[in-house]
Structures are given as C-alpha cells and as structure tokens.
Image (cartoon, rainbow, N blue to C red; front, side):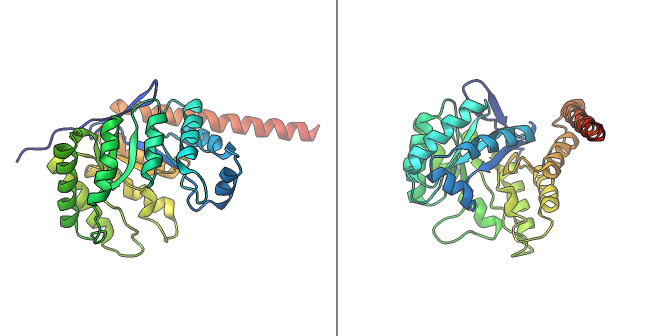
Length: 307
C-alpha cells in the first residue's frame, strides 16, 4: 500500500486562509477563549462583561496562534446567544479563522450561521446520535469537523479500537453526508500520562496509523497529556514535536506559553516545514527586538528615578 495523499483542510475568516496539512507548518489553535474552570471569567460573562475575551484574543495572537477556539459553555446562560456574541467580538479583533467549540448543537448552529468564513467545528464523537446531530450542520455550513474516535461504550485505550472508530467516522461523514475527507480532522485522544504510563505511546501509534492510512489532519488538546503532572510546559513541549513527527498537524493549546510554541516552531524547522528557517529566524529577531525595547524602557525608568 502506498502512502496516503496529503490532505489540505482549509479554514477561512472573511479575509485570511489557514491550511492544515502534513507538509505545512503546524497549526496552533489557541484554546484560551474558554470559560471552563475559570470562575471569574464565567461571572464576567454572566454579567455581560466581555473584556476578558478581548484580552485573550490579543494575547493568543501575540503568542503565535493561527486559529482561535471559541467556547462559551457557561452554566445558566443562553449559550447560543453568548457564542454568537463572542464570535462577533473575535472577528472584530483579528482575521484569524475560528474553531467553534460547543457540545450544544443549537449553539453550534447559531455560531456557524453567524461566522463570516469557513469554520472548524469542535467536536463530534463516533456515537451514532452525535454524528447524526453534528454532521448535517458541518455539511450545511461548509465547515470542517474535529472528530474523536470514542463511542457510547468508552474512550478506547488501545490504538486498534481508535482506528476502527476513525474508519467509521470517515465512512459515515463521506458516504452518508457527503463531507470531503479533507474536512475531517481527527483527535486521536491524547490522555493524561500521569494516570497511565502507556497512553503516550498509544496516542503516537494512533497518530501514525491514521496518517499512514488516510493522510487525515489531526489535532489534540495538548495540555491533556500533562494534566496532573508538575512541569507541564516541559511535558507539552516534548509531546507535540513527537506527535508532529508521526503526523499530527495541529493542536488546541495555550499560545501564551513560549516554551511550547517555540518547541512546535523548532519542530517545523527540523521537519522541513519552515523553508530555510525563515519563520524561525523572523521570530527570533522579533524576540530580540522586544527584549531590547524592554531593557531600554527599564533603563529609562531607572534613570528617571535617579534624577
């Protein structure tokens, strides 16, 4: 069997296109616009204060995000309305494409209808009822979809079961709903290494198998791997280049973590996805300039105090 073809998943805002592909630079999907576990942010959103969205957008853009994940899952709110408002705010601040993230089908549809561009939908499992609820929206609004190979029974720990469920997702999406295979992005289920020392290898085996068989683009919640462990940034910075080496093409991650972002961009360079190191050298020079500006400002402040 020959190598699977390169699949290009194209996401767009009103003015900018981002392409996920195994021969392209890794796509960083900024995860921060998400109130899960952030009680202050949830309270602000309930009170109609959206200032934190603006701060999170600007910080992730500055950190190097290529796409922004937008989740508005706040208990005791109208999630469809909140998601539409958040997408509007994001699109007023940046031209990066958006990943619309919700477990509520009504919110997904509201967000897709409001979004100006071609979105990525996060997410869908291999469960029959979930596929039947989400895939028609993906087709209707010409979006791409993140799909996870787990079903009603369990989150499968073995790579083989995940491959079986990926096969089901591909078959149902392409044959029953007419979704292009290029628009299916698989989350291979990166689990916390602190809970089970075998999960890292299982995820890497899954990524390699999916890449070799279908050439599908893949993503994961990068911080899942290090959950519950100390030194999480170091673990994430090691995990993503390993995953990239076997076919991972994007990750939902915090773009405000330079250690992890730099590891990804270094892996792009080493994997031949940054021609002549142009992006790496440009980023290095920007950091140098920023550090020099900070040092100059500090010197000026000290001189002012001395007078």
